[in-house]
Amino acid sequence: MAIRPLIFGVLFIAVFVGIILSIIWVDTSHPVHQPDPLSPMAPGPATPGTVQ
Image (tube, rainbow, N blue to C red):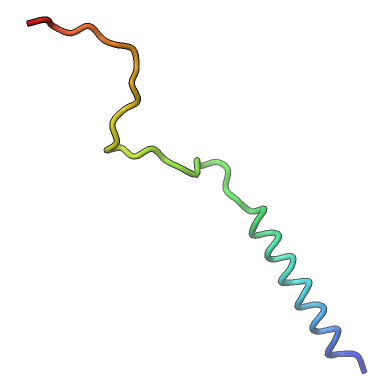
């Protein structure tokens, strides 16, 4: 009987579907790269300071 090829086919499809779902299942609510709190800030508009 063809039980062994059926088992291999079902396992192959299950692994294939698992790989596809793991690629699709990405949490997009959080950014992939979070800014480093210790890194210097991006240059913005110059603020006038006290002149000595």
